[in-house]
Length: 244
Image (tube, rainbow, N blue to C red):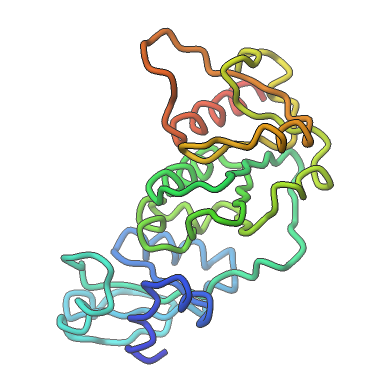
């Protein structure tokens, strides 16, 4: 890929048009290389390095660039000197659902840090799939990729999944609500899909009613009225793993 095209990958429209995204920094490139051993499509990634990483051992085709060029390619202000151009996965293939896998559905999540943190949690516990609604932040946004700390390579991910489609895919859906049953109630772990809403607006009430989503609550004793989205998903994921 030409250097001018790589620069364009900072923008979503060009990531979609060119079918690639950026992975920047030593840790993320290491995670990419580990994942490429199990996901053959990732082996088409290409590496771009400065002198500091010219001896980096990699299975990918490697290109040498100078520090000025790296500064133009990278999304961070002080790039480490190593980044990869990674092919985006096909989103229209029939998903392979593993036995016992749970689905986390995020409705119009907007914060890149939240999404990256959620992916990191799901990768840590394993056994989760993540679905994103239309209107959600692009998971291949460089800020999401960095916040995921490489988890984006390890969590099955589907984008632009309509909220209304969940009823045809899942027989039992759960959501969070201040008036729901306790998260520690036994039925909580028995659902197929767990629905979480936008950081500010949540999920439309009429949609929850149509999906017959069972409400649960994370019980707290403090003075504030809400939890950060990523924190809520983290607690739910932990409870699902603990009770399985």
